[in-house]
Image (tube, rainbow, N blue to C red; front, side, top):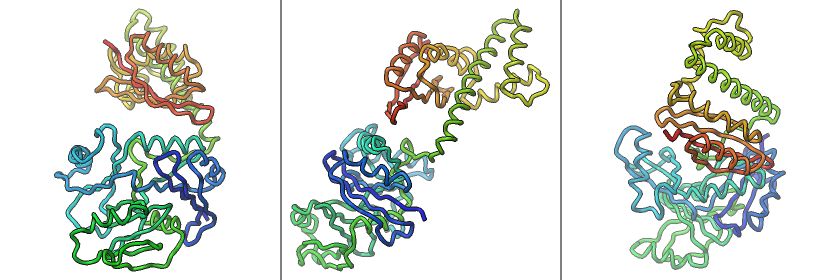
Length: 407
């Protein structure tokens, strides 16, 4: 039976972290505890290795929005939503991450767009914490959405000197218990009847403000774990989508095969460029291409240049273009010397944007110095280089480059 590790975190380094281990049925705890702060996350590393890790983030660190966006296309709705919310946001749209969800069950209203908004810097900080602790996170969810949803009632849970309140299918708020009276006084000033509230832990509120339905008390994180499993929403989407983990052996073979294929592609594309430019050496280059082609496709018994051209054109088209002057071939020819100068830096994947005439590389290296050396080598080749985020994963540093010709 697969076990799950639930971890609840806040935005500050000093915030305590609660954790809980359950089995598939989520009916009982196997183990639980609390860490002093994020620096203690490595205490959960061993516990996380054989379990599915799901993270509850403090609802105070994320904004939940539901709105009506004109249009029928889901892509168009998602593109327009951030700018419809722009006046209500505390930061520029470019600095924020928008995670979208389907319409919640039993939602009352005409809204067609539901999103959670959080700063890119914050979600990247959390992921860095877990990467540093060698913990792979499968899903993230605001803790407010893991609270039970009760018709015509708020739901409330006390945890870590805070009160979590869910007041709609896609809405809620977090109140520090030291100022809860002040907050409730503001929220319920104009309310004639007491607000019905369903509580799952003891909460000190005024009787004239609330009509309380007290449910049997249980471990707060266990209640949230049950609610987590009822939610299909995952904050880790788009740029933060979690890729399935492969076994170390398979990853090693794929890495070797990927590097070999990339090297062979560079070799073959270089030969094709040479064939187009040097007609006088047609026969010599033709023989070289045929030899390289047989190495790449050993099952081929008879090689014809027309077949080589057609298949290479097809392969190059998959990467985004194959023109000689400004396309993938010319770009790879300029990039190849940089790889030779920085052997510690290895390619993981490449993508060519034909419209932008931009080559996008995902690479790995053993240190950050290799990234700077590679960038300098590219700039010396008259290329414009933009570096992406670089992450240290154990003894390997991963990163990316966006490369364009200056001319």
